[in-house]
Structure formats: C-alpha cells, structure tokens
Image 1 (cartoon, helix red, strand yellow):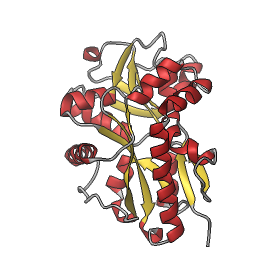
Image 2 (cartoon, helix red, strand yellow):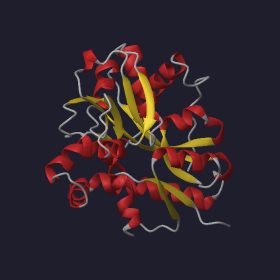
Image 3 (tube, rainbow, N blue to C red):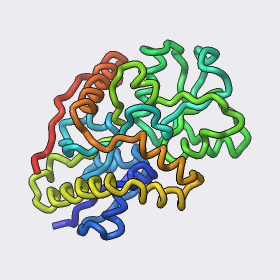
Length: 274
C-alpha cells in the first residue's frame, strides 16, 4: 500500500498546522507534497494525493470526489492580510478597471468577483498573471489581487497605497467568517485506516499549533520580512477551526458562487468520520 500523500500549501499561514508534523513533534508516517492552492487542487483532482489543504472552491465545485476533514480550515474573522487587492487608485475610481489576478488562487479570485459585482459593483475585467514578475519588469497594473506570502510582501509597495482586504470586506458585508482553505480527503481512499490516522495527525497538529501560536509567530518572523509583532497580528486574525459560523460562511459563499455562475449547484457539506 502506498504511503499517504498529504498536500501542504506552501504559505506561512498553515505553519501552525504543519510545523509540529514536519518537525516530528507529532509522529507521522506520510509524505508531504508542497505547492500553491491551485496546484494542489489539480493534483488532488487527478488522484495524486490522498489528503490535502485545498481551496474552498475546489470542494464546492467537485464535492463528488471529496469529503471534508472535520474542524480544520484556514480563514479569517476580519482582516486576513494575505488575501488583498492592492491598487494605484482609490476603490471608487476603479470602476471597469482591469485587475491582475494571481494564478495561484481559485477561491480568492472567485471571492473578489463576488465582492466587486454583488457588494461593490465595480464590474472590472480580470487578467491572470504573476504579479511579482510583472512588477520586477517595471509594469504597473491598475490593481492586483495577490495572496499568501506574496500579499504579505506587496502590501507595503510604494506604488500601491490602496489595500482592499477581502477577509475584512466579507465580514463587513455578511457578518460571517470567510473560509479560504479547507482540508479534503478523496472519497476513494477515505476508508483506509492509514489515511484516517493521517487525518487525526493533522488535527493534532492544528491543536498543537493553536496552543503554541506565540512560538509560531517567532518562527515565521525568522523566515519572512515580517516582524514578530506583525506575525503575531497576522496569526491573531486567522481562523483554523471549521465550526458553525465558519460553515455558515461557506454556505453563503456557495450561494453567491451560484448567483454569479461560478458553480452549477450548491453541494451538501459532507465530512469524513474518523
């Protein structure tokens, strides 16, 4: 039997979940596969991994392939800081503008489309590309949707003084947390005991990380441009649980995905029993 392959988003925000596993604090016997959300979504859909952190929208679009892991997510109850649209002009001057969207994201791109049609009707156009590369080449798009570590690096860019934080705007609009990422297991391997043990290890990792969040902040500061104070603020705004409010937020997101024709139907949220 193949060892369990576990997908790991290669961003700082999941460090509290994976550090105790990668460092051996919590014993495990699975192989990590690293990549941005869009890459992990493809690998999971092709059966190249068993369990993974994935874009929320991957489940909502392809729920027939997956089950959700219980009480494990990555989201926000306010400013998320690492999912932002930066722009050269104030929001009210961006009507009909073209927005450069990171190719690494699926959920955040879908959320931005909802926010800028249903919440603030700017009705922009979208172009997919690599923001950091374009900026290094001297290009200056009107607005950029950036996520993950790139967003943390670009949020203080001198040419982009205006920041639209998607997590902050969502809760201002709906009053609910927003779940950007969830953890999935493929239905065709969900019966395997080694897969269930990997899932239990992930949940123990989350619990350890939450109890040691100050240590996670210090580690993050050592490997990024953020100060310890900034990393503490960053982690404070994140959600790692998938409780009633978070699930309600996912359901509202699904409703707007359907309204904006980004999914064809709203699936039931089905969880693996471990």
